[in-house]
Amino acid sequence: MRAAPTAILEVGVLQGRSLGAWASKFPCATVLGLDAFVLKEDPAMPVLQPGRYTVQEADQEDPASLLAATAGQSFDLIIDDGGHSMRQQQNTMQALWPKVRPCGLFIMEDLHTSIEGKGFKKMQDFSPTTLDLMTGLVPSNASELVDFGKILSEAVAVELYRPSDDHITAVIHKRC
Image 1 (tube, helix red, strand yellow):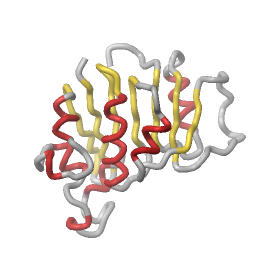
Image 2 (cartoon, one colour; image 1 turned 30 degrees about the vertical axis):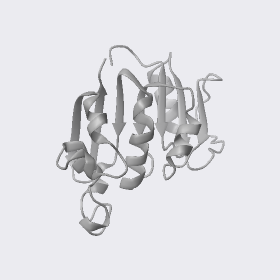
Image 3 (cartoon, helix red, strand yellow; image 1 turned 120 degrees about the vertical axis):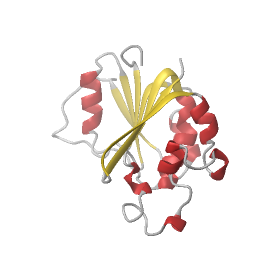
């Protein structure tokens, strides 16, 4: 990103505390949170400026739900910290990558679920894995869910942060 983001989307907000962190870190940004359930009031949540963030219900199992919740919007930064299944990750990438603005970032957390024993029982349970697609280990046409070839052709860089096999994060930079 060339400048501080003005529109942030986080998929998977749980109790919403990360929304407050994003709003605090980027004071000029509006933050949209999506989750499979409607966020309940949390007394421990810091009071933020009204209108700084909103939460909507959307299901990562249903790409149309993600599109409906973000209709007419685009984002400088999208963080997928929602469901950890590969289907959810790939659905989210397919639906929301077009909403990343030029020079923006798409961050996908929890790619450790692509490692046998960390997120699924056997390799044949889901192939290709999201991690395989991110690293280009399989042809992009091998996934029925996501055209990673198109996504990666619009990316300047894909960085994988892998401090351990229990936490892998991908940062995809969109072309300017």
